[in-house]
Image 1 (cartoon, rainbow over the protein chains, first blue to last red):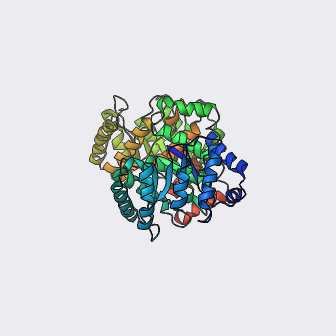
Image 2 (spheres, helix red, strand yellow; image 1 turned 90 degrees about the vertical axis):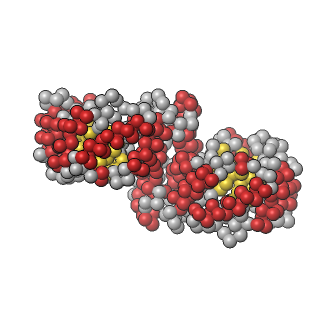
Image 3 (tube, rainbow over the protein chains, first blue to last red; image 1 turned 45 degrees about the vertical axis):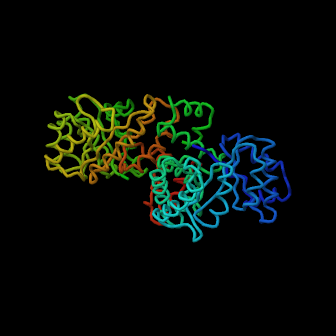
Length: 267
Length: 267
């Protein structure tokens, strides 16, 4: 399971303020806390207006790389900002994201192919997020066709089925799980990632819903997630679910996590 | 999800002592606490020696039925005790259990057929619990053949895949989940039940493992479980998982449970 830490995101008011004020301490703490919590990558989203995004993104990357050395997931569809950002990353990055939108594909794919790096592929296009599993798969078919044509191997693609909230559609969980299974079946060499927290949007007890959904999504085939890695319940669910799915040899990781107090905080 | 409360079981020392001493208050409290927690049935196991089991089982049933009126799941393979017990139940009971053992089938099936009640069918035979999914399915094939021959419809059968501990075999969770899926595929009209707590035997933090496994087992097709219904974490997982699997119309049950403090106790 590849964990992408979601917290450095300029669409959140506090982070945006820190970016605009060049508050390096705030950003560094966000980076360090997530790395301590065991992330594999840090998502980096400046979230500012196009005119200032290139400069903001580069500042973020430099600031983060001063204190941690995990790879970054550059979260931007602004090709100028993205291209500039990629000149400053120290480790092989991931790009977040392409989609079935032809214009976005045309702009982004050359950048992805040039850097030969992993890329998140959203199951949406210019007309929005398809409701059914079938329509999401149709969008992804176009995306995979384009990535293959651009010479990007399926192993580099992290397909995102786009998880919607069960708060407005009680079938949203099933649709997400079926989409994950369909992606795994159709593109067995590709990876599957998603932001999990959407599932509980608008409902109380969100953390509990999110961690339970992580368990179901892992069984379905999710092998990466964009989450708040400092959420203890989520980490607990991850460790226990991997144990139950036979991915923890001699139960070693689980028993070590239990001894160190990382799991067993909840009953 | 049909919850069978597991706590009135004479193989547990405290319960055994209460049975032998005819401690009605102890037994009544066990019954009332489980009913308050929302069970659908109460498992009743005297667990005493064959000579006294008929009398003990009848006493248990009478004692329980003085205070609660949920159906009982009569847990005995002693046909004398079972036959006697069935004369005293007020609601249509369940019988726990038959298996692929020919002698057990021969003794038990006429009793089940006569009372036309639901029965738990274990995926084991006289040579023990098969290790592989395939061998468990072979045993269940013999059991379903026998129940059908005896005029018992599949709807009355609660197949139990027999969950083993991941403490000694890290594949045990996957084997259980694959078995559940196979039963659902082969016998779509039958039900699937199991004692969940075996999964965590010998490991620390058992409650957390059990509740996470419940989530996975529900998705695989489990529609009943023999559990401690007073375990809050387990009930919480059940409610949230049913929400995520699209079984909670308008999220009503979840939001009510949240408001009443039944879920959201853990993060």
